[in-house]
Length: 307
Length: 308
Image 1 (tube, helix red, strand yellow):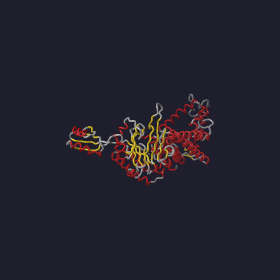
Image 2 (image 1 turned 90 degrees about the vertical axis):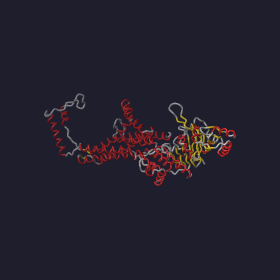
Image 3 (image 1 turned 120 degrees about the vertical axis):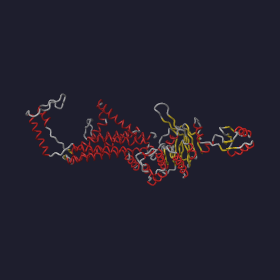
Image 4 (image 1 turned 180 degrees about the vertical axis):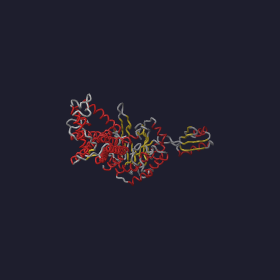
C-alpha cells in the first residue's frame, strides 16, 4: 500500500494542474499582501486618541446645530428609520478612521480563504481520478495491482494529502504575506494564547473541510469517470439544488451541504443558515456524506468494467 | 501446460435500449506455454474484450478465464507479477517521464532503477528516458507501453495490437522483440490485424469472428487446413500446357498468366514430365503460397465456423 500511495502522490504532483493552481495561488497571495500593505497605514495610539476627540467634538457641534447638517435617511433606508438628531449626528461624525491592519483579524481572513480552497480541493479530488480515466492510465495501473479497492483508496488518500498540504501552505503563505502589514502598518493587539488556539482551530476545521471536499469531488468524478462531470455536478448542486431547496423547503436546510460547511468553517454553533446545528454535528454530517459517496464510488469501481 | 485457458467465455454489454451487444459468444481457447500465439480477428470480433476478461478488467457474463492457472475474476493478484500486458493504446501518465512512468509502476513489484534502465534500452527509449511522455510520438508511447509490459520480466505477455502507431522499422523491431521473448522461453499472446507480421512471428494462431474462434492451431496447419495444396506453373503457351497436364491426369486450372495444378510440391516432377513430353518448357514452377490474409478473409467474411 505504501508503494501504491507513493506512486499516486508522485503522479498527482507531476500534474500540470497542480503547478498551475500553485502559481495562481502564489500570485493571488502576493497580490493580496501588496494590496493590504498599500491600503493600510501606521497610526500611533496618540493620533487615534486625537481622532476620537475630534470626532466627539464634531458630534457635539452637530448636536448644537453647527457644521454641515446630519445625513437625512434615504427613502426606504431601514437603518436610520426613527432615528433622532443625535443618532444622525453620531452616524455622520462619530467615526474614527483606523487604517491599521489588525493581526487579530487574520482568523476571519483565513476562514474567508477557506471557501476558494474548498473549490480547489474539489477540483484536485475530481481531477486526480477523472484525468486517469481520460488518459486510461487507470487501465495500466490495474494490470499491475488488480485489487481495485486498494487502488481507489490509495488514490483518494493521495488526493486528500495533496489538497490538505496545498491548503495548509496557502493559509501559511496568506498569513506570511500579511505579516508586513501587521508589523509595519498595524497592530498585533489581541493576539494572545486564546487567539493562537482559535487560529489552530480554524486551520483544523478548514483542513477537515478540505479533506471532505476532496473526497466528494473524487467520488463524483470516479462515479462519472470524468472530471468535467464532477465539476458540473458540483456547480449544478450548489447553484440549483441548494438555492431551490434552501428557498422553498426550509425544513431541509439542515441537510444541505453549504449550510453545514459554513457552520463547520465558522466554528460557531448555529452559524450559517442552519439553525441549531452544532459544529460537531455539522462535521459528522459532512463526513458521512463524503464517506457514503466514496463508498458508492468504490462499489461501482469494483463492479464495472474498465475500458 | 496451458498458460491461458478460456472456457465458454461470453461477454455481453448492456445497453439502455435494445438487446445487449454480444462481444464474445462462447469462446474456448487454450494457449500452450512458450512461443508466440497470434490472436486474430477483424474489428469488433471480440479480441480486446477477451483480453480484458483475461486481465480482470472486464467481468465475463459467463464462462471462465484462467491465466497461469489463476482465475482472472478472483485470483489474479496471485499471478499478476508474472504477467505483462498492453491493452490497446497504452495508458500512460503524461506528466511523468518515461523513466518515472516505469519506476512508479515498478515499485509496486519492488523493481528498481536497474530494471527500468534495462527496459528503456530494450525498447529503444534510453535517450528520451527523462523527457515527459506528453512530448512523445504515438510510436514512442507504444514502445513505452511495451516497456511497461516487459518491466516485470514476465512469463506471459499479453499484448493487444502492439504494433499500433509504429512505422515499418518499428513494426520490424516489435516482430524481432516478440521472437526474442519467445526464444527466452516466455509465452507471448499477441492480438493483431497486421497479418503479414503475425505470419512471420507467430507459432500458433487463433482466428476470431463474431465473438467466436473459427480456427486455431499452428500457423502452417491453419494455412493449409481445408484447402488443397497447389503448384503455380508458368510457360509460354498456356493452352497447350493446360492440355498436356490434363492429358497426364492432373487437375489444372488456368489463371491470369499462369496455370494452377492441384498437386503437392513434393510431386512437382509429374508436372515437368507431362510438359516435356509435349515439348513444352517451364518459365516458372513454385508451390502456391497461401497467405494468412487469404485464410483470414475466407474465415471472417461472414463465415460461422466451429472453434478449432
